[in-house]
Image (cartoon, rainbow, N blue to C red; front, side, top):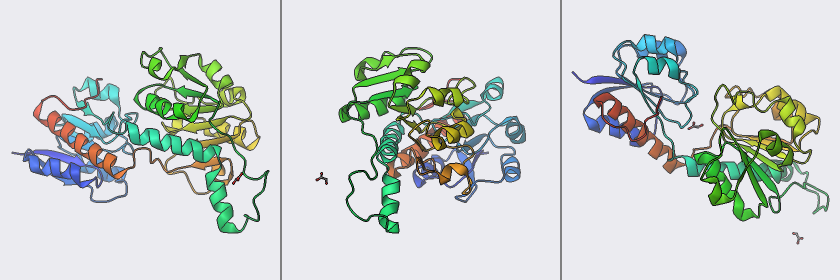
Length: 323
Ligand code: GLV
Ligand code: GLV
């Protein structure tokens, strides 16, 4: 009797191949690029031993109950795990796989791209070229902010935060600050100074959020936060939308309290097309594509499949989340 697994979306073929060629499980797939409706998810997980899910699937007590007592492993195709009810999962002895490290470079690259696009107003410039707004080379037109000589603050100097810092240094950044729960030994490599959140916010020309979403970081970037930022500073978030109070960010951007924001993550996702943030020229929003390179997504799929198999067979996972 083969163990049963449910895959909540079409994933890169590298992952499906690992599952089918293992001969260890019977794979059932939500064969679509669109999210599985909640009712279908609850029905399709019934009796499975393993679930391979995405960050857009909320795996809570209801889903775990719907799966039933066979469930041994949840493998998420993401490094973030705020969509998983980890307390409940731990209580039941279910193992969790995730995909750290393999997406660090891709996500750091996207963060740098978004930071530069926001600071140098690239989407606005592209739009002006298309709509006839480009009348001449103008000394005062489409000016933004540069990294050279600047102070960059990274909130959460983890794997991705460090990779972002490494990439920004060669732009001539003068000071690198970071904040978080504790100082990190790896900060030495990039010469980053551990400072309080307050100091980071008030002294940085660029603030990059790359911390995990936890109860501590939820809503961290709020009215008080934005009011301490320099008026010329740029805010970039590539972690999770809920780290930001979006109403407060809107207020800060529309009132000129801060210069601009670049977001790869929002609340909700997708952001409705009539959302006020989308009307602001000084806000660049991307559809959560931090890890979206062909090769990274292939490797993530393979890793999440291997994590799932290890969970089924009770062996060591390539990337297990310690709960
Ligand atoms: C992306 O946001 C991820 O958590 O992998
Ligand atoms: C810009 O194109 C310059 O030549 O200054």
